[in-house]
Length: 150
Length: 150
DNA sequence: CATATTCCCCATAATGTTAGTCGACAATAT
DNA sequence: ATATTGTCGACTAACATTATGGGGAATATG
Image (cartoon, rainbow over all chains, first blue to last red; front, side, top):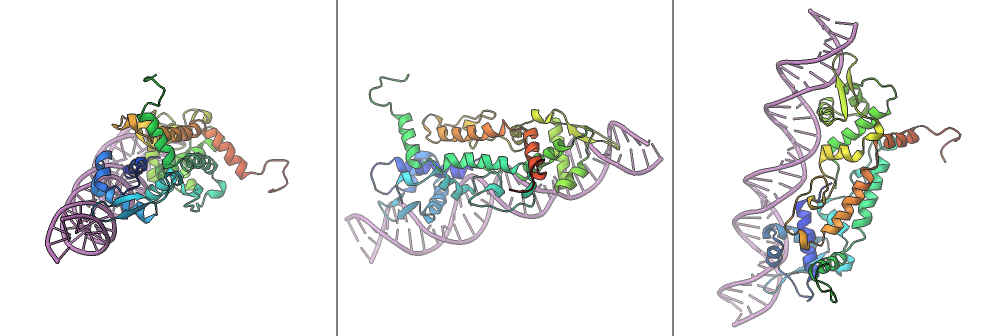
């Protein structure tokens, strides 16, 4: 039930990109440095994200990557499926990568696993990079009107 | 987010064992045949389950394995953690295998992953082998009073 | 144009995990 | 005694993960 490190990198890098206010390009080296990710590895990840239409890129000085859509349009589920594959614990309950299982008709576990899948997907498909960013900002800066930590 | 095949084997074998009404021992070969699991592999799995106090065993003719506790006392979560490790998508939100992460304090993903973990654990820790068995029986035999499929 | 910067694509290596298989042995029932 | 069944440890083949590296193409700048 574990997220790969690669996927963790992808999500963290995307949140970082989404937090950037100005609309310019951000290069791999900078993101990699900030998030402590091996740059050449992040390169591969960004390429995948680009091919999936999540990022777009521009070469040369001042170039780099930027989000292709609004942060509110990119769900965590979308990214996770792209990097790690289906979120369902078993394929026979996956909506995006369903695969028939011979025991399916009489399997006692299947309906339970379906509940698990729905619970996971229910969260990950409803939360976007924008939502994550907001949470991140709440964590990092004390909201105005507050005097200090509670 | 995927269950290993090994874990799938373990769960299916345990449900099968729990469905057996008579209190005797059931041997590996029989379970392996019924559930279509490589016998020598299931051997390893049962040994692990035994060492964890879920199964007990007896050698010799008429021997085999049986559940060590009532089916209602064994949760799916317990079995899954034993075979596959923590159910949390990332270790820094695991209750049973927590591990500190350097980004923890400012991480935007963590609270989301915590929700995912809670959702998964909420289901898997509350459902027992007994629950699964009931579902299995419902699937396999049409309840009395019903004339046929709806 | 020359040059530096940055992304693009392919290959490959190091390491770890999964899903088994095997052989010899110990316990038990008849 | 012998057949049956579990116990234990080692081993392996295949695959996945986590990178690293070379060589190129696109682009901005002077």
